[in-house]
Length: 353
Image 1 (tube, rainbow, N blue to C red):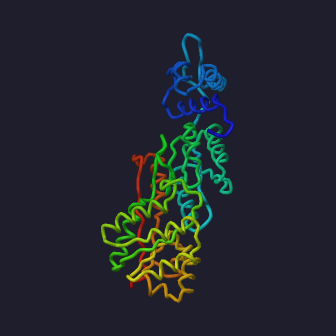
Image 2: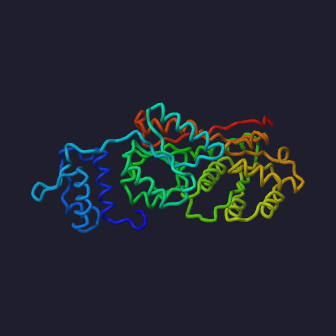
Image 3: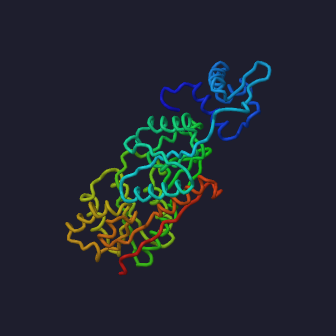
């Protein structure tokens, strides 16, 4: 629920969404005010205020004996607008957003992009979605599940009208009425281990990117991937130095903790990095300062497959953002009926050694 949002507003927008989604069709009766009061855990007066506002909009017909009925004629018409909540700057995000826009336009849908500067403002996200539903009655929503106020959206079901989360998701449960087209992070962890096993690596280092605000494995895709790496590495008999991961995850500088992890290694070592750009800018220089030749002394595997991986000739994972965008729009338009699809990353091999 948006901060300061009145309960009658929640009821009004939720019932509006029920009508928009076809849960209650023209001519059908809604539950009684008492039943709705129990459903929303409010008093009957609060229910009445919310429903009376919808009656003023000519969505409902309310009579003491007949109850509340959805009007056969009303002014609600779904538009072709699609709410987009995603980052738009950076290599991968640019490709991702461009592909989404192309697919939407091919389906006669009109993308409405939220200002990227407001994405980290939870109140602004909720307000954007509420206004889209209230003012334009959108066809649906496509959301990159990074900096999203999941708890607030969970309490605001009226925000969900054909909502599809794309690429990433940071919540401990799936939200009702939403669909998902996500990268398969277990497959990513498995491919990491298979890559190093094929190169006879006996020890894996995973220098993490700091995440000072950490709420649990569900909130961090890095930690999710680490857990899968640990699982599959154990099956292959490969050691994983997770202590390095957790030190860097907590904010320890690479030039302090990485040398200790590297110098202590007496077996062939592989380095998997969450971000190839972070590796090239921060990890690579530390290894060189130690007198190492990164390309020769380690098996190195990057992630996200950006221009940094091309420049440094890194093997890396393509997150298939354009395929995720393609599938996401097909799920939105019901061309694909599944509620959840996991897309495996694609390994890009540049270094043949």
